[in-house]
Length: 309
Image 1 (spheres, rainbow, N blue to C red):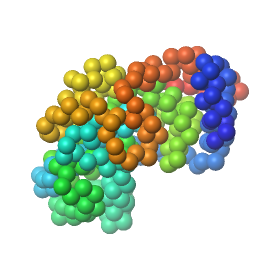
Image 2: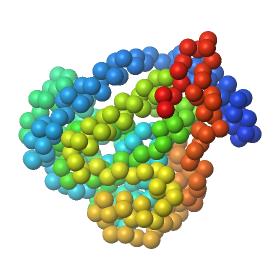
Image 3: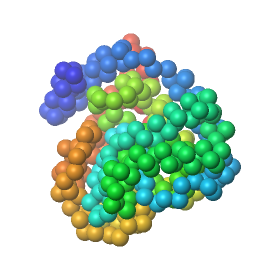
């Protein structure tokens, strides 16, 4: 924690060389405490793509839960998902529920009953899909009984979109995209409270982001038109138009309250909690620019290629 704090101070003092040296030390110390196997993660993404193909998603979604209340906001960590949630949660009738584990619990249920995840999803019947969607709604709907939409802002649910697309055919899905290098660097300088074990080594982080990109491309192909992409840069540079498009995507009437999203009072426990309580700012763009020399050329003794972008 001290190393990350010192690195942040050096960054604030506009000393990227010192900041990067400290970030490298901090991340190496954190990485040494974790068991992470990049090859296994590659294989997991391969399995997701194999299991949740077009036919499987289409077949189950015909009998899935028709409720339009769920909204899923997904993307890489530090990509702008908290901002997106804060904006739509400012619309009357939309409840921002934060980062929920409810979908991950469904995946664990598949593992328990079908014997594997994600492979067990191939054995799901229409009845089981209905049971899974009922399980989710029984947990989430009670968070805001009168809401027309409930936003589940768990970024890592991008891994679970196959299950979401299959059992919630009318769910709204917002995918937040941010510049790859800015996203990865924002992760690299963050000491996360949750399990983001891919984030503490530059090469592993870049490799994970590549997996994220190819998986999102698969979901778009498997369920065309179901996922609304939101460009973080576009949202910052053309705020009202992009905010309106998000609200349209979740099929809710526009309210100017979304333009003053930072005034919306609600609990937020994410790493971006402070930022979304401020007016819109541009400092989230090009955040890695001054650090690119340190990201592209790693010290030889570390044997790292850096971010592959």
